[in-house]
Amino acid sequence: MTADAGDPLGWVAEELERLDAEGLRRPTRVCRTLPGGRVEIDGRELWNFGSNDYLGLAASPLSPDREEGAVLTGAGDSPPDSVADGCERPLPYGRASALPCGATASPAVVGRSPEVAELERTIAEFEGTEDAVVFPTGYAANLGTVSALTGPGDAVFLERDCHACLVDGARLGGGRLRVWRRGPGWAGGLPKLERELQKAADARRRWIVTDAVFSMDGDAVPLPGLLELARRYDAAIVMDEAHATGVCGRGGRGWWEACGTEVEDAPPTDPRVIRTGTLSKAVGAAGGFVSGSQSLCDYLRHTAKSHIFSTALPPAVAAAGTANLRWIASPAGAAARERLERTGTRLTRALRDAFGVDRLPGTEGCPIVPLLCGDPNAAVRASAALAEAGFFVPAIRPPTVPRGTSRLRVSLSAAHPDEAVDDLANALIHLLKDAA
Image (cartoon, rainbow, N blue to C red):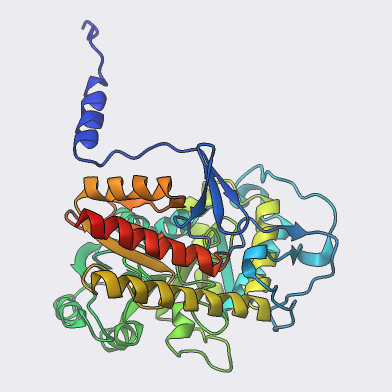
């Protein structure tokens, strides 16, 4: 057999040309996060309205020298005059020594570092559960958890817009997949899900898989109605709190807490609800987690391949996650959440006054504010024009969102000063009204 003299990957260039023509090719940027809600992209400093740094923690300093001031019981530093000025968080245990930046191996091989063990204890206390498992990323947490829990003979009900890692985990699990779609209000979209649950009475197990807050739409799943269906049809819920942890709920514990399921300020464990989350968004660090019962977490440590076969989270990153979670649970964290909600409400109202509700499908007060453009090229042009005006607002296109729904995704942070948000609103109104 003779080798092909041509390039076996020649089709790749053709696919890239197709993506260019359809406005779907994404730039490869060099991005450096700066304090105060700003970012440097390819050497140009802009207001950063594209990240998921909802509380402004990603670029604010950790101090190894101060006594710990923010703990889960609520004692904490007074909030700064402006969250945009940053807020120091002390490292756990008051340690001043440098922490290792490498974990060397999987926790299944070498065990957890003290910092990861402390982070898991902190997450469990924060979430009000018996235990927690830390993964190297939020993607790995969902991929490993859903694929480990589901299997042949199971019925898995995926919300249409849930994150790709949940979908991939369900596919790896091998269960029968069904898609449902949420609608507005507590019961929106649930009649179809109920019909699908009724059809799956013969399934070995039933799993409802969903995001808590949807990252591209800025709305939330109707959790109370979902929990009612899970109890009625003997199903379990896997809910990804990635965009809700630190943002939603009185204590920042996520959508579960915000829906009023807390008891004495701490959400109770519920065997039907498995909560996953990330440390890379509002928590301002990196990694993912699952919180739940001791038996669930032990099971995942033995069966979730993305945990068993991945190098553990670096100790320095784990320590940052612990410090930031404690800050989130403190009065300073509560002040940042209140500011974030006010900012989201103000921006959404200003844009809805200009463009109407149909182009802004998100929930008022949410830090995710989508502005629909429809055509991907229109979204790309609008994003480029905003960058020229000093704002980084990414264009979101298929396959991230369905065709015909390309959009600008504004992501707010408590670090943004009011004047920057108001200037962004004016820039969006001027730019898109002129283009209409």
